[in-house]
Length: 309
Image: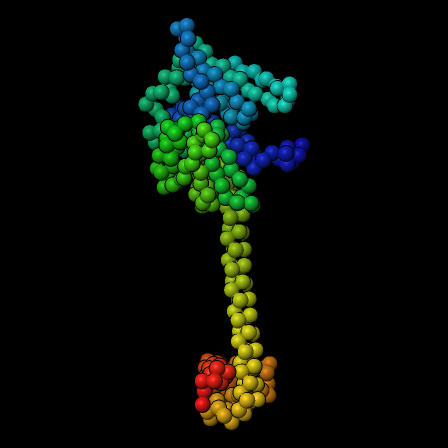
C-alpha cells in the first residue's frame, strides 16, 4: 500500500511527507520559528470581538498535519480541525481553528523575540516555509526548487535567511506571486540537509553524483570521438595530397626528407603515425611523421593553387 501511495505522489509531495513526520523534539524556539513560517504562509491572524483568532485553510495535508502536531507539542493543546471536500473536484481542504487564549499564546510567541535568532531556528523556519509553499522538480529530470509567495516581503525574508547559509537565490514575479528559485543542484542538496530531509538528501546526492560522473564520461567520449574523427579526416587528406603530388609532379618532386615518408604512406595507407615512423630509416617519432605529412599537404595545396614552382 505504501509503495502504491509513493507512485501516486509527486516528488515534492513525497519530500513534504518526510518533513511532516520528522521528530518534533528540540528547542521550543525552533518549533516556534517553524510555526511562524507556517502561519505567515498559510494562515490568517485577526482579532475580533475582543478575542484572537488563527485560521489555516490549506489543501496541503502534510502542512496541516505538521501544524497540528507543532501546536500540540509547543503549547499543549489540540486545535479544532475539519475537512471539506469539493463536490466538483473532490479536492480536500483542511481548516484549522485556534481561538481565544490559545490563539493569543501562539500569536505572542510567533511575534515575540524567540524566532530566527539562531541558525537552528532558521533551519526550522526553512522547514516550515518548505512545507507551506515550496515546489521541487524530480532531480532525475532537472534541478529546480522554488518558493511561491503572495508578496515581496515574505520573499525577501526567505532570501535573507538563505544568505545566512551562503545560499543565493533568484526571484521573479509570476502573475501576482513572488517566486524565489534555486537551480543549483549543490545548493538544493544543502537545503534538503538544512530542513532535515535525510532520506531524500541521500537519494538526491546519489543521483547528483551519478549525473555528474555520467556527464563527465559523455564529455570525454564526445571529445575522444571528435579527436578520432579529426585524425581520420587528416589521414585521408594526407593520402589524397600525396596521391595528387604523385599524379601531377611525381614523388621525386618533394624535398628529400619528405620523399621517404610519402612513399611509405602510399605503400601503407592504413598505417598509424607510429607505424609509419617505425618503417622509416632511421625511425622517427609520431610527431615527426605528422610534421612531415603536414609539409607535404602544404606543398600539395600550393600546387593546386598554382603557387608552387
